[in-house]
Length: 484
Image 1 (tube, rainbow, N blue to C red):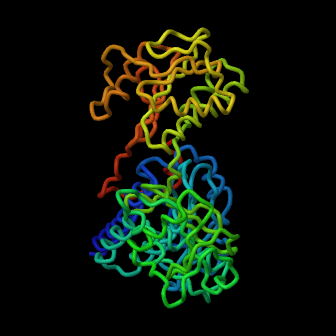
Image 2 (tube, rainbow, N blue to C red; image 1 turned 180 degrees about the vertical axis):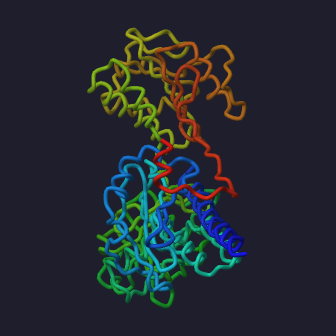
Image 3 (tube, rainbow, N blue to C red; image 1 turned 90 degrees about the horizontal axis):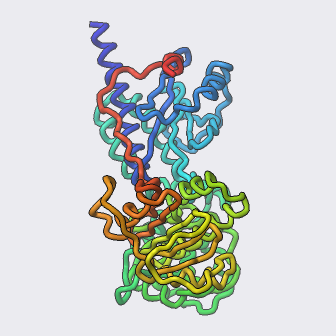
């Protein structure tokens, strides 16, 4: 009977851990793109560390983990700081491990002696703050579940962590706000976040919102200069999204800003802002939320996300680094290509760039130029951005000159074609498959940027297999390191 009780207890604990892990992974994958999550934990002060890493997030960090957890016992005895979470009086954060490319959060409590959560630091994140708050809440809920010994709370934890995006953004802003303003503040963050999402989805005569809406502490209003200011009893309510959306038209494409005290629209200003401010920058279809001038997150389609909405050009940069071009040329060529890609994304039009690395640029069917255009000169680069709107591809040589535009790309059928991606993408696959010294960058109006070389898309997103819901007991850290 005692053995059966122990087995049942262990099964319950594993269920708690994996429900929390799945919830965090699913939520972060929506917030930041495909994500992996891992956990190190020790239930008691004398227990060994166990590893839950179903998708091998921690592989490659073995030397550092061995140094931290076997080269020293400091992790068992490190000083704890008071937690801002008031539920468990003995719930304390521990020092971040600062592993390269990872975001982590650790905690101790009287329920679970030690836990350290990890996820990937995506290169295009506005801020790691909301993700750290997400991991902090996962640590809190796991301790809570293990302490309640009830399956009800375990199931709830997974649901909560899946939909935690808005709460993570709110928690991060509140933490920063308390540092800057103290606890005695009239600003309430949830209504602000609700308004940002509500306004972002409200069209005016078919157009998405554009312009900046700034939230400031009410007592700083009297120290600001306004171009126009509404009477206190006639100020538009912030939660009247349609009305605010109409007024937002007055600050489009200008230095003017719509000012709010968190409940009402106070007026329009173009003067310096108070030190503490929350800015919602609407950019037609998406936007960015910043705190004191520092980005927090983006928003689109009624949700908050971590992405900067800039093209991930890592694969292109790596391809250029592998070429025989000199370092200065590689750097300048990358800057030119990045400028063309980002402009196409901003203007929301599809575009194709053919980067020709041959010593002598090849002949491509299209509108050739009598004199190739040097894209190192800003006026010509601006013209190239405009020419990118014309159907067909831009033909850019290793000499950083535009040789032709409106180019037609053809070739034979290749295995990696995707009929859902349209002619621009599939033509690039076919053309590059037959040209070894060619890189093709495809910018779709509604999809991420694709970098294609020799008929293969190098920028395809990796879809991670979800962790199994039922699993054997997680290995100890010592056994996990020995598996390498």
